[in-house]
Each structure stands twice: as structure tokens, then as C-alpha cells.
Image (cartoon, rainbow, N blue to C red; front, side, top):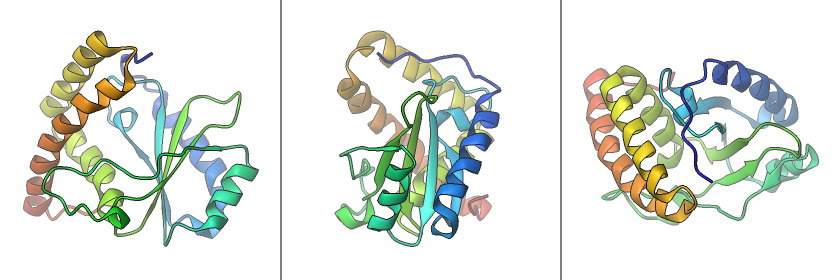
Length: 184
């Protein structure tokens, strides 16, 4: 069931704990580990799931082995949504997706290759929303309305949410050019 919670100031603290654990699991395979998604934007209501992106040089079986050995569950979903107008080459949007080990708080761990557009997308999206509180509030309102109407239909939720996010993506790309944005 999809529920949008009020912003929780503990989400960044929870991320740091998870990040530390993932660093120990992956060592030098992880080039960076970032808090992404709605829980990474101060003030933004979200599903109570900590989204994390692990940036790696390449997607390799060794990453899967380490994550599974640590108790993470690999998802069959291996490709991100492609924003309208972006190059649709599947290699640019592939990823590994894991969920938390049994008994831990809900997490979505996205492993993406450095320099691919799907690796840049969540970082730019996060930073744009952090810098644009009105857009952040609009995103929250849209997510709440979708969840109100489709709380038990995850597919419908994302079928509506993804095109809305594409609108923000266009604005974020323009903002990135204007500000010479680099992932923080």
C-alpha cells in the first residue's frame, strides 16, 4: 500500500547508518553512496523508504555477490524509467536494485554505473528539489493525490508519477546548465 508520510528529520540519520554499512560491504567497489529520492529532500513528504544510490565503475557480478551475501534481496527490475526525449539505449538505463535484509527498515538500493544518465538523474533531481522548495511542495501534493486514488496499485502510481517527474527533469536540466551544477 502506498502511503505518503510527513517529512521525517530522522531519514538523513537513518541514511548515514545504512551508508556506513554499505561502505563496509562494498569497499572500493562503491565510488560514492548517496541519499536520493524524496526522503533526501528536507521538508518533502515521502513513502517511508530510504532510497540510496551506489555509484560504481561498472555493474558486475561481484557487486551482486557482496550484496546478497550481506542479506540484501536483489530485484528483477534492472532498468530505470527513461524520461521522454532521452536516448532509449537500454545500456544507459540499466541498474541493480536491492531491498533491505529481512527485519531491517525499508530501503531501496539502486546500483548504477558512473557517468550514465540514470546515475546523474537522481542526484540532479534531488539537488533541484532541494533548491526549489515550491517545486518540492508541488511534487509532494501530486504524490499524495496519486496515492489517495491508487494506494493499492503501484503500477498506476508510477504510470502517473513518472511523466510528472519528466517535467521536473526538464527544468532541472536547464537549472543545471545555468548553475554549472555538479553532483555534491
